[in-house]
Length: 290
Image (cartoon, rainbow, N blue to C red; front, top):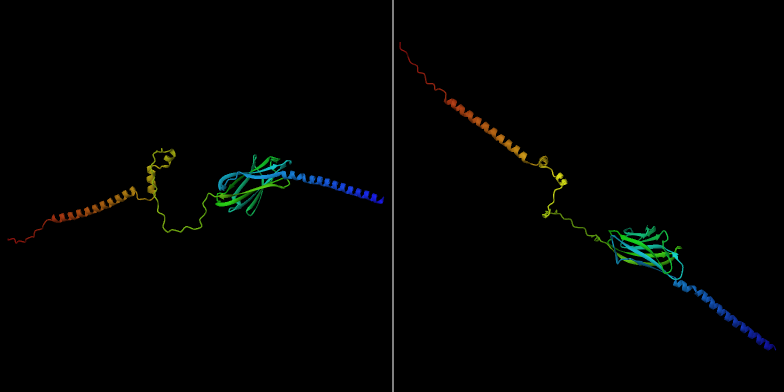
């Protein structure tokens, strides 16, 4: 009798353990299902960022390029606001040779700029006006330009999208070459030359079109009298000086000729007076007879 009762108690214990094991297995399956359930949702809720508008290479100068950063979301989650941050790193050029501006439809967008060495971070001070929802995008537009004195270098741009809690959603980077328009400076100094450059004569080719003189041109041309006066005042040997010199020479010659003529006339008059004197005959003394 006791043995039969013990057997029944053992069977009851085995049934209890079996039921406990079955309940534990069910609960484990339910718990695993509950924990693994959110995982596919979070995996499907993906963010991605792309950079568009990038050229094959940037050209230094006044050329401004427009680059866009686009973040997208796939999944069944809710909507979220986005804060953009652009990271610039340069090689072969300086940060002050790079000009970047964040723009929206209303104009320039305020940025918080922090630079250290060859790396600069441009972060939006405000959240993006758009809202990122599933199967939708939010775009940030940047204008990029480089200084004219850039010869050659490289720039890397990394667009980062954050949520309002500064949690990184997605990041995308790209590297491009920067080519300058000015030739690179030469290190060798030119050798000094002692010979002075020969003046070159410019040959003016006659044009078929005749230009009529304007009033301003006529006003600028001085009259002939003024031109002669300016030439005389400049100290050049002109026609008036030559005339005065010739007149003085002729006057000197005339005075000399008059003096010479006067001298000749006086000599001739003295000779005539000498010839006209009466010749005195010698007086003979005779004796008178008484």
